[in-house]
Length: 201
Image 1: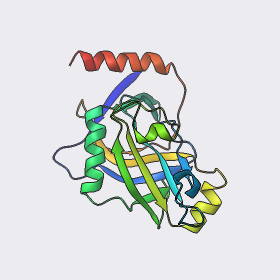
Image 2: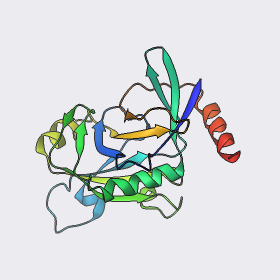
Image 3: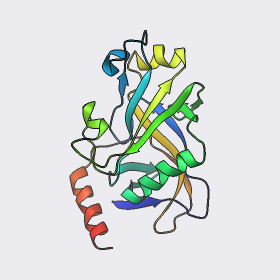
Image 4: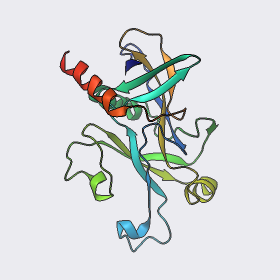
């Protein structure tokens, strides 16, 4: 099966356009809902309504199907870093959707970082085990309907990006919707192939 590395088009300002909250994130990493008691901020009453989770994970194969064409895409560490920077540089932190279908108001990316330490990274404190180079974010949810009807009920479990990338073989740009189908197909073998191709560059 084909493996396609997606990269940012350096000539375009288009990159990650929005963060979607979804039931089945293609990167298979759920977010965690952070509440006041977890932050131990006694002066704040009620829930803080913050979701923390992975936004992009480098070298993680993501299954895609376009008609009869089946393939995997992945992002290098460099592309993940650039995407995280461009998202904020282009002032997209208030862009969010539900299941890649409905524009949302009241969701904002309030923290964004790249995992650089497997022991001391903030994500480790909250029980996440993410590869180095992962893009992690915290999203503030000032939307009662989304928080009560989707987050608290577990209808959404993770983040998925929306954006425009080009593949390394100069495939035409296409929107990336991580909320589409995913399959557990010999993932370790694909990761090994990806790592081998990176080492040969």
